[in-house]
Image 1 (cartoon, rainbow, N blue to C red):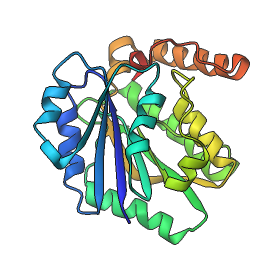
Image 2 (cartoon, rainbow, N blue to C red):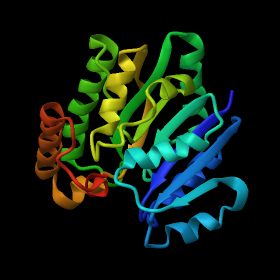
Image 3 (spheres, rainbow, N blue to C red):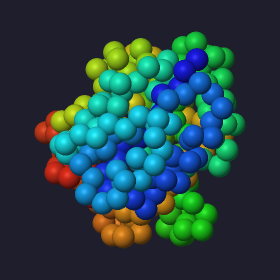
Length: 240
């Protein structure tokens, strides 16, 4: 079974090398697709060093990270799509993805899954621990008990057919497209949260602008989507 790992980037020179080195070590049949959204830093220069080990889709700046992800998915050949942010890592990628695929093999009704979000230990603050505790709890309850689908874009994995039924991520949503995707997926099949699938990220936005402001931006954006059907935010990279 082939795995397609899709990583959207925009000015990720600080993180992209560590991310790619992590996923290139996976011993499964895989492809890594990086979709670069008009980077102006050294991201593309770094990507060129990997040669044919990865597929790089260098395109003009899009209006949303959803569009960036969809560009990668259209080129993907795998039976499973794994969408990960450019600063998201796992401790043991072989164990992680073998376990993830085994979940699909054990439960034929499962169409998508996500995992536990954590901040890399050396950067983690008390605020990070508190927010992520509640964030993971909400995701688990919505996915595993309420059937109303929730997941962060930092890690989502789904069957190709399920992605295609959704016609991809909603490109009109500048932010909140990740939650929207899992909500829509939950209406056509089983989605699940597995705490043993732990992914780490830098929490760079919360460390830059603070959790109170970031959470307020998220809540306003969710309200805007529910009321007006579109994102309040105009630029996806400010909250990624």
